[in-house]
Length: 265
Length: 273
Image (cartoon, chains in turn brown, purple):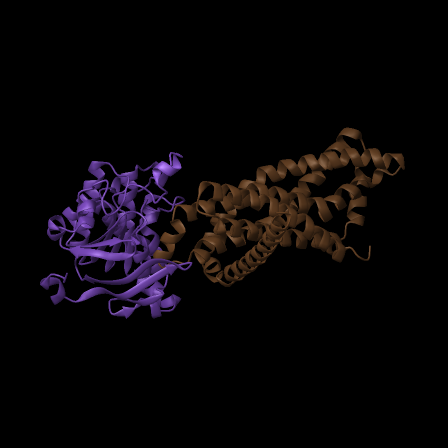
């Protein structure tokens, strides 16, 4: 009996592996087709603008409020640590670099995945379950070009903008706590920040990160929705998978990107 | 049984010959021969899961047959490439089982969808056309509502207006009567006939609602377990002596289609023997 269950386990492992590889291939093909069918979306930019509202504008509140709080916490924690070494004037640098290089892109992307990504998956999954995608195909309209591609580009465009707003709001939060509440010197807060933050090395790399995260999150969200079994459990499972997979993807990609970008520092 | 003479005399819009279709090696349809004459309303009847909807999907080129061919308007659908199929589908309208309206668009935009996607008509022309279609289904006043604000019967009527938006040559109905109250059911039934005759179209109605279908259509194909087991005019179907047809037409509980799902002997399940 033991042999039999061991055999079944190995078979299960093989099955899962093959399944996983097959799904990855399917997802890559889906990505390729989405990018290849983007011409319509750009010709009719209205379609993208509409989705920008749903993914970008409606994510603003959570991004701005979270950015403010993260910045305030950074200001508080940073002040206590820096004070030990008598270098609280570098608070501005600490807040700005942490946000622009790491926290801005990463936390904004995590929030984006749970706010906009899950909504995208649920929407596409339900459109599929209620035969809306099939109906579109019957009307000789390609659902990938008409539904998926505009959402994909809206996600890719809004992610760097949201990350930038998150960082800006965070720096303002750090300023509120550090300068206004605790009383760090305002001049050194801003001037040291200005001197230490490099546009190419720090800001541009942060923007690249958030662009990559935008592609990853939106792709995962759209694929999960498109691939969801057309049932209530199917859609709810897909929504959960979107949040889990894209969060892991963000953190994994962040490590990769960071190790390439900040090698020499 | 041969087709009635007047149907044979006309040109057929759809000709299906020796068609088989398998899904994951499970046969769904086998050896189907079927013609749909131009201008007629034809019903494909059968119990749930008998492969009726798959037939519609084959006609629309959504899936390809494992064997045999489907001809629509003289064109072999199974040999068309993606572009050719899309071109063909622009001349087809389909009403899905639960309407499948786009939930993020208003009633007006749902009906206007194909006109905006496929024609270069200006907004004023589209507006007039959409209002005409909505007026035909009696819902001109509901143009600004969202699909979530419609009752089941109204949603079905909007979907019908959307299906005929581009005046198709072929209108396919997938279970158009399911889940409707008697009034809505009568309305939809009348509209199917009215649009078919007014647009000079051809209609295929896939349904298991026998009585409604027999009142409405010109010709019936009865599909069971992936095969056509009977065909004829509604009167011929009503008068049929075939036990399978009788069971279906008169809704008898037991007959060639068993009431019991295949199982072991009852006594053995109860551990009496």
